[in-house]
Image (cartoon, rainbow, N blue to C red; front, side, top):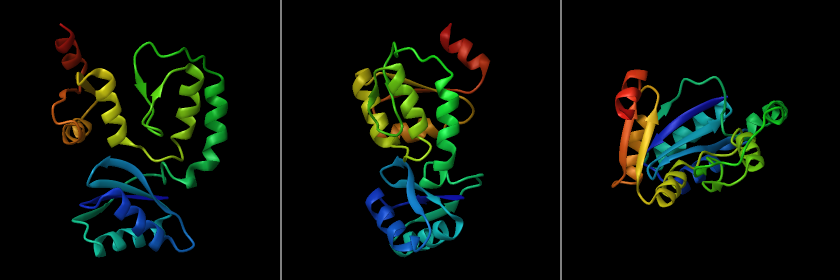
Length: 180
């Protein structure tokens, strides 16, 4: 599988390019990262064709991603049963704080729903824009923490929810200092 980031087109334009370019392959919007940034996923030839179609439609850039699979696409379907089996072995409690699922951009209210949504995200697109809008609404604006190296998600969030307070914490020391 393959993935590529498309800059400068909205999701409807990218989706149209994918449909036109897929042919007998699969190319789908997989990560709806920002209003003008969509990652496509599918088989390598179809993703390449969709990328070219996006350039023709006016994309500023199309960047092939170094990935090991066509994540968040129908090509991940064979992995779903194994993940479902693994998740069935884990006890999930109901969330005590708001949790928003990537696949639906809706609040997860039960442990069983969390389990279903984790499996669904293998083949469903990541609805980052809608999810962050929903998270901001649930938090009343609030503060957001990005835990882990880099600040990519913080940057995307500021484009979606400009008034959000975002803290990117990449090390244990940064987390300890934030909590102090």
